[in-house]
Image (cartoon, rainbow, N blue to C red; front, side):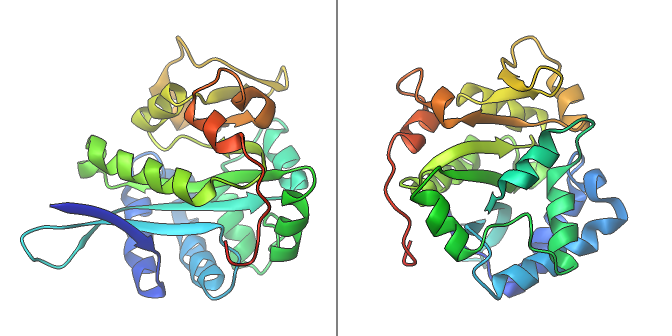
Length: 237
């Protein structure tokens, strides 16, 4: 048994979209607009619009590798982040897919904008998807590979804020255990997830995340280690 990750290819898009569509929490967020996701990913794979697009797969007994899930992240603009945080909020992933599919890349930063933000105020990193097949969702080794890949790929960027919308109660718990917080739109700040109904949160629009300032304390959290360096972005990253 070998679990690994690799860059998403155009031929992977159909199956990756099917994994998202079949997910009991994530699929309903798209509804009939799931076709936007296929169009958006194919469009962005043909350019440099992704920060990271990975598939996670497993090879058993010499059989062809089986895709277990998909992880996609992008750098988004300050304006999009403000939109997302403004009540009543919306599902981030379908909205990004819709805008990119229609030719509007405004939520995403260009390569030039990434370079400029990384050398100045910092970047907003959005997790578009971290979606694992439901039959593999309880496998710790799959999530470990996904998390390791995430850290390896993004370490060195000057992050200003990290944001994600949990894709299952288990995903939310993992985010909380890793140092993430739940954004309170009424108070305009992040707060603790303790005592909250994770199933209810996953079913409604929400934002999990952390700012650079929050990530630096307490020391030792994975988000802190990710944000503690400020190496400049280069085209070869």
